Image (tube, rainbow, N blue to C red; front, top):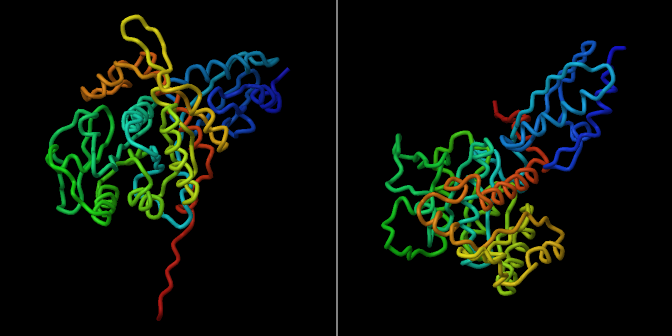
Length: 362
C-alpha cells in the first residue's frame, strides 16, 4: 500500500513546533512534500534562527512520519528563512537590514544594555546575521561590553564600516569620542547623530539589528518611532515597583507611536549568592509578569542578578559568548528565540514586491 500526501499532512498536523506552539501544516512550514511509494521527503521552513532547534525538530518530524503506515524512509530538510517584516506605516526599511528590534526601558540601571548585547549574541548563536546599534548617545556602553576599541574605517569618506567582534556588526558613538568626554549636546544634535549611525553605517545583510536604546521617552525615542522602521520593541525592567512604573510609560510610548511590543524581560529578578547558591528576590517578585498581564503583552523571561553576568559583560565577553552552555546563557537564548518567533509572526514587508512607479512629463 503506497502512502498518500494526505496521510503525510495528517501526521504533520499533529507535530507541534515547540517554539511557536503551532503545527507544521497550519503554519505552512512544511513545504515541497514528495511521496514516492514508501519514501517521504519534505522541507521544514522556520521563520526564526534555530541552529540549536534543527535536530530536535527533524527528529520529531521523522518520528511522526515513520509511524505512518507504509512509510519506510523519511528525508527531512529543516532550515531557517528570515525575511523582512512590516514596520510603522510610511517608514521605509533600511537597506540590508530586514528587521530592527529596539531594546528599551523607562529608566536607567535595569540592565537594558546587558540584555541588548546578550540578546544580539544569542540571535547570532542561533545562526542569524546580527548588528548592534548603541543608540545611547549620552552614555554609550557597547564598545566596552563588546570588547571593541579603535575607530571605524571609511572607504569613501561618506559612510563607515561597522566594527566587529563575537560575530556581531556594531556601531556606536563611543567609537568616535574619548571615553572620558561628556556628550554636552542638545536634542537635535543627538537625533542627527543617531540617524547618521543608522543610515551611514554599511550594514551587511542583517537579519536583525538590535538597537540598545537610552532610558526614558525623549528625543531619541521619538526619532526612532518616526523615522526608523522598527519591527518591534522589547521592554526591560526589574521587579521593583519604581522600575515598573517607568517601564509602563516606555511601553505605552511605543504603543502610541505604532511600534508593536514584542514582550517584557524581567532583569535582576532573583539574586543568586555566588558562595552558597541561595536565591533571594531582593527587588520583589512577579512585577514583570503582572505588567504583561495588565497590558496584554508576552512575558519573555526572567534573568537573575548574578555576579558572573556583570563580570563577563565588563570584561568585553558577555555571558552568551563567555559561558555559552551556562544557565544564564540558556536563559538569554530562550528569550532570543521568543523574540525571533514574535517577529516571524508579524506581517511580512511586501514593499519590495511592488514595482516603483515613476511619472514623467513628456
